[in-house]
Length: 134
Image (cartoon, rainbow, N blue to C red; front, top):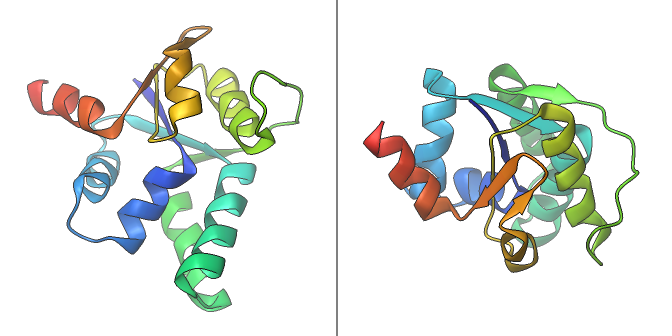
């Protein structure tokens, strides 16, 4: 199954160790599912970590390398305008391009969609429960 993480999942996985986000990222590393991301998601993740968590350029670069070793990184083109926040639209574009089964997010605007095309949008806790049942 192909899965896309929203920016907030990556941020929680790397800035808040020991939580559910780190656990789902470890599932990706172990190959439980195929993690797909996009340059736009990685860029947003880095910018947020640098602005809100005071990450250095070197630490941010290491993060991108770490994620890139586990995830397939797509270069999507902006074309969707489903939600008001353009960053949310970039995440949907990645899910569509990846033909993802799931988009894991904590973003209430994305979660309100519940499904976009063939992708089911789930909060982190529900996705983790799904993984634990498998």
